[in-house]
Amino acid sequence: MITKIALAQLSASDDIEKNIQKAEHFMRKAAENQAHIICFPEMGFIKFFPQYRTDKKYFNYAEPVPGPTVERFQKLAKKYSLVTIINIFEQEGSGFYFNTTPVIDQNGILLGKAQMIHIAEEPFFNEKYYYTPGRTGFPVFHTQSGTIGLAICYDRHFPEQMRALVIQGVDFIFIPQAGVKGNPIELYEIEMRAASFTNQVFIALVNRVGIEDQLEFIGGSFVTNPTGSIIAYAGTDKEELLLADCDLSLIEKMRQECPFLRDRRPELYSILQQQPV
Image 1 (cartoon, rainbow, N blue to C red):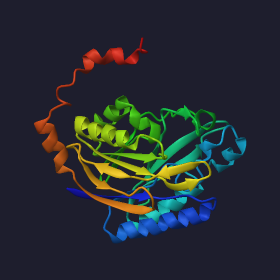
Image 2 (cartoon, rainbow, N blue to C red):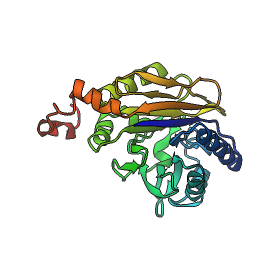
Image 3 (tube, rainbow, N blue to C red):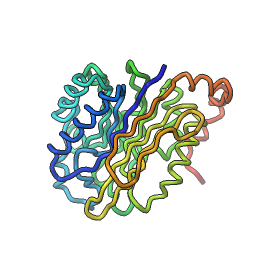
């Protein structure tokens, strides 16, 4: 089975409506190229506000799931017959705010959501003020074009999350990201190539691009396959729709050749619940 995926490497302005209109343009383009799945970057339709430290006005960006943005993309997913993965700032109850990725099937049905589990805190990524640690766990989403898992930006650094998704049967792990100039992008590529190989799964990382106040987003979106190879790579200085044909039969082929999942010893892994000494 060949699944064509599309990664919409976009910039975001202060005009949310124009950002969403641009996203629809990329969905139309993806559909014209016979893509089955499209994924957008982290906080892809709003300014990347975590660069500003503890400014409560940005909580006004938050909305429920489902809510206006999700419902709008449900209509677009059905219109273009695309499994659609977006990332938004979610409010779930009073005082709880999450970095959340809803997944919409190609018929427009909201399959569910994954919240960012691991929350970063570093210069210009003041995320612990804005985001509550996710409480969705590690859901997977069964679509007509394959089974999908999510690792939102910082989550990608945690091999426990990748493996938790893989043992539930995902074909793809999508990573909405906000990676900036100065980050060790080459190391991130090596990290995701290794994760693809050790889990025999496709990984698709989609990044923002462009300059927003103090941050320059570096782009460089890419797709890795179960051999650990990069099969599609976007540029670092422009908006781009990255397309990749993913042969899902390669997953089983690699698991026969390199049976890492078969040879796991989960009965011995309880030590992973401990804090490092």
